[in-house]
Image 1 (cartoon, rainbow over the protein chains, first blue to last red):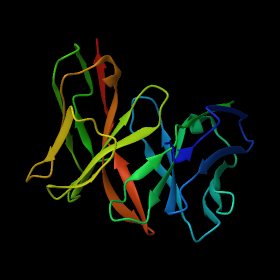
Image 2: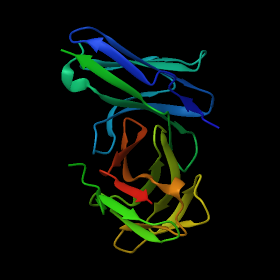
Image 3: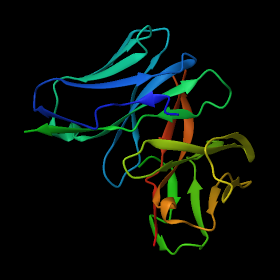
Image 4: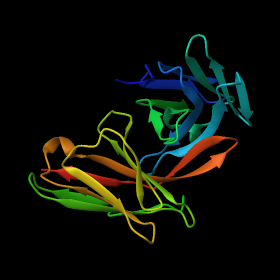
Length: 113
Length: 114
């Protein structure tokens, strides 16, 4: 049962425009949400996180929005750059001692120069 | 460089065989997490160790086992391999950042079962 879902397998955006990546979840016990970026032949690297008690967190060009009532979060990248082309994974952690992350299936972002 | 080291990077083997994947977490990190990424799938949590003890188990098959040694490196053993076990296997260690448990991943071990 996939608790974290990314329904768009791919997204193409022009350089300089906004990229919006979406993620939905089903488990209301998730307390933190994270975004990771993955380049080919590398492991996922952490981008940004948000606590379930907040609705927005910003770090430079990256902003994550959380809508708890809709169980939906999104990652905004503004402006998009060709180096942002990668697979983006949404992840979430539960309020338990294990703290392992549940991942979505990823969205491949292509930023066109 | 994430500081998490995984070997081997690539491994090709045959069905029915047994392989061992190795992971060294970042210096000082006590946790090791193992994840599997099959084609076009997200990362599936397999198992977590903390300071040598198993902490949590995910969707890990009975044919798979893991351990963490006193020097904190970990090994994931995959036996009676099947074609469907072909995947990327990642290990990670963790750090708290602003309350979130952030996993830092190694570059992965790509297993191909023929």
